[in-house]
Image 1 (cartoon, helix red, strand yellow):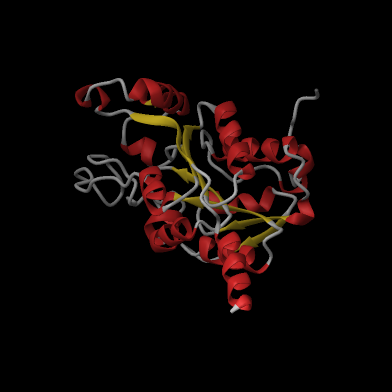
Image 2: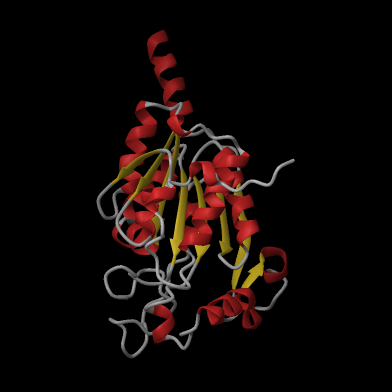
Length: 272
């Protein structure tokens, strides 16, 4: 068995990558492209939909169909694509600001509909492209350009929201654990219904500088320590869980996706 490189899906004439030194977006991109290769996804039958933001630039480097959309609306455009042509493999790339802050309402309803999309949300804990303002996922107490004294709000648990709203598959991993991240992306691509993979990748330029992680290796060390596999995390007491977060598969179910339910309703209507 040959080792998947993902190079057949990489638009090499667009290199080098535009992301900052230490940014985890390149790790997530590599995991996605290798997953495409291992699953032998056909570029002409695959659509990558992106919004606005650092991770939203990823479609510049991918050799598939692509649709670059407006801020917070990637899931709305992707829903339309999948509803019109259910045979397409539709992948949505979003950041935390794009996906669940500006686009929070679309996120909830995409999961509720259980539309057959694979959403890969890179959570960098702030609005990276526009200067490091806080987002809905910025950890409580963290410092950003707009929370100078520390974030007074509680952070949003993206995976818990997706699970509660009705997603079929939900997983979280850090960019430190790139191979596990790739495995979860493969599972998500193969799953019918709404699938979410959250990749934890703190912004190396803004969030790191404001929160005593100025060197990229410090990010990786912090991610290795803070991201705890689900089984181990759930054995910890509430006090021991403080400052940590669980990784792994949070939800895996097989509820009918939107297109399946819509086809059933149409069949019933024709029989009336």
